[in-house]
Image 1: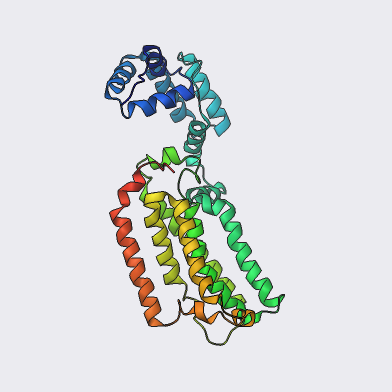
Image 2 (image 1 turned 60 degrees about the vertical axis):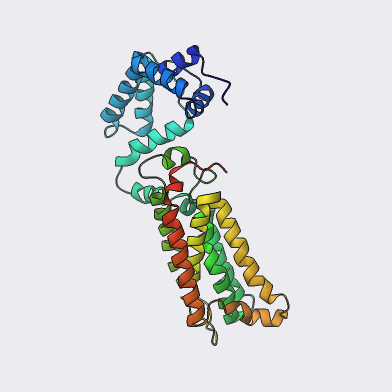
Length: 320
């Protein structure tokens, strides 16, 4: 039962756009569950002229200057328009400023398109995950040629490959990964659609990088081929997405990665170190043969079905 209600003074300041950011967030959270306060706030915003004037001035300034001036100049003019319209004390949070700056930059063409593409692909490609992927590949090459392991590194890389896209998905979506998650998740382009787009970007980078690494590594006798990790990687990625609809993408990625690590290491606990470096035969059975690949294909279909059933859950903000 709600015992606190929004005061008339806070309602007025919120409608005028002069309420502090913390008070505004508190009010917006409260009206989600309080119909009476929501109606009062809605009526005040409709009747108040100051807030509407500020929004009209901001909209006019953005439309007028987006194509004509740099971002910094546009931002100063928008702030000035807000002050001239009676919103001298209107708080502008960092999230709103980044959103506005991104909108103004939306029409920039030329060399900046690559940077925009990386930003659109999500935090994974512009964050530490991309560096970690390159580090794994470089470490495999170094162990093969500098560490004397030769072709046995192919088996080790094969065991690591399926969880590399899972890690990328874990840092691609959610309030712990994206500073604009609150805005993105509630926008028409957010939710599962954006998550799948970012997942495709992660897979689009992982597959060619691992294919290049496989081509560079020394050849090994026997064992699964270079594409044997694709179905396991797809199944684990879909499992992380489906589980992420319940616990969030980062937690789901950690759970799936931990499960895979256990599945890989437990069969090798009673294996000698020499046998481990010669190809980890027990763990490689997860990849070899049609039965194993068929099982991964079935798991991928189940993960996709779960994702379809849970698709609406990504339209809401993560709470954990």
